[in-house]
Length: 236
Image (tube, rainbow, N blue to C red; front, top):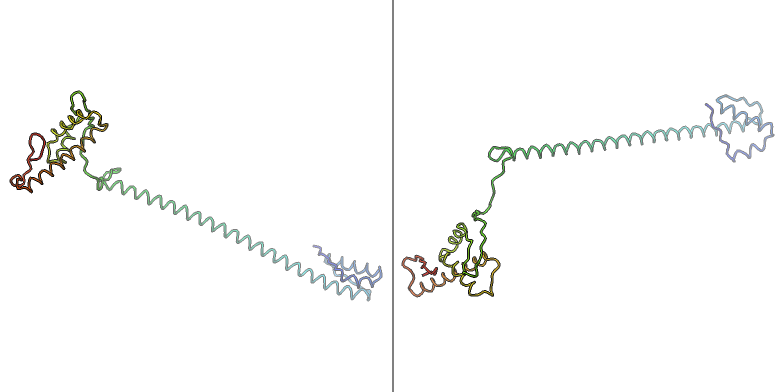
């Protein structure tokens, strides 16, 4: 393989001191050295210049070889670094996938345990926690008939709820009184009859309790503290 020849301008000062024939001899010697041959310079005037140029060419060749070696090492190092980064990236992806699979398995396992926990049946629903007791009332549709002054549509369940909530009054009688009041006050028509009755019964219960307290304060309370309700729905 042929070698490269480098001639710097600082060498030209000495070359100009040679004749054309001597300069040609020096150039031929350089070309032979570049082809891997060992040139023989017989001219005593050319020999010193040839020795200097040969030393420079060998120095340049050594530098070039070292540079190529460094470039090859850098390229190999970058290739190794790229491969290492690629391996790390693949490892991270693998870890993420494994983590996702583990979470999925754990989640599925947890769900399975939850399903089999209730009543020993897969898919069983858990019992309601801290839910208030609900009283089942039929879908009452309360109506007020202005011609008769009566409120209709109060179901048995709703009546039972009101009787338990307001024990100091006659609920049925109070509903009749509320209907009469609506008949006597046509301009104060109520859109929500159920809400109107609830407020009416609450007020009646409060008034009955106040009357009982006044009677008791006057020494006329019922014997043994028993609450009695008369036919008119009033506490006595």
